[in-house]
Image (cartoon, rainbow, N blue to C red; front, side):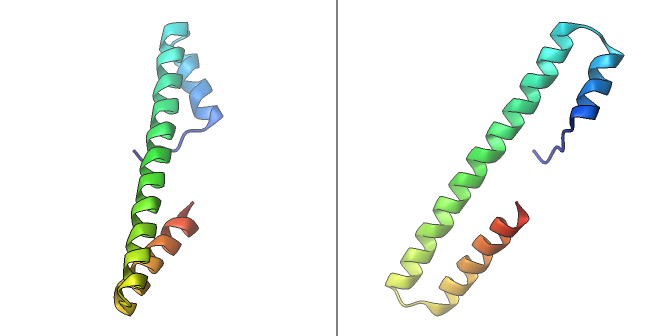
Length: 78
């Protein structure tokens, strides 16, 4: 799921095969990949926030720090 798409790459791919059907399929694939990445990211963030809340409720410093670090790494990566 870690595809990096650029407008230039898209034009190169479309230029190789001038079929509009091919271009539409490639564009749909790009949009689907972006959508799935967004959904995965949101679900992961929600899960980490719930784990952080649970750690706070249980006064579990180690779990709190671990989950907070994961969340920060995820946030800094994007």
